[in-house]
Length: 182
Image (cartoon, rainbow, N blue to C red; front, side):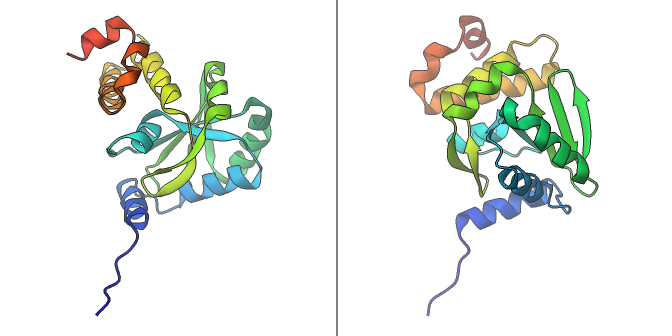
């Protein structure tokens, strides 16, 4: 007798939606809007790390949107979601969801969009920054003294996970960060 089992990506997607208590379908709505607007974008941060190594739970989806597409996309997002602007980001939220979508506006991340490839992140296919770029973003975050200490510790853990899985990347990590990993 054949027994039906769901595809792994369906289970992973359900898990992510459950953990983020995403009853508003923020994840699907944001991604659909980006695609409908033809925006060039990619995932960065912890969700992107999850595309390359064994995933860990995250309540955030960090994105970079191509500068040329950002104004149109932000206007469209503002019609559906609450937007909160900060110096280098725009945070997107909706009632009934703990998912935090953060659009990084720091121009250093713009080249990541062109090098992104489609990958799976906890059951969701989306453009993800190249592993080298994901690592670079984590190095920038871990080096930011204005960032909360607990966030910098998570960044260090993500760097460690990436260089364990991709040892050739170790040379891209500054010595002062490598020293903090031991």
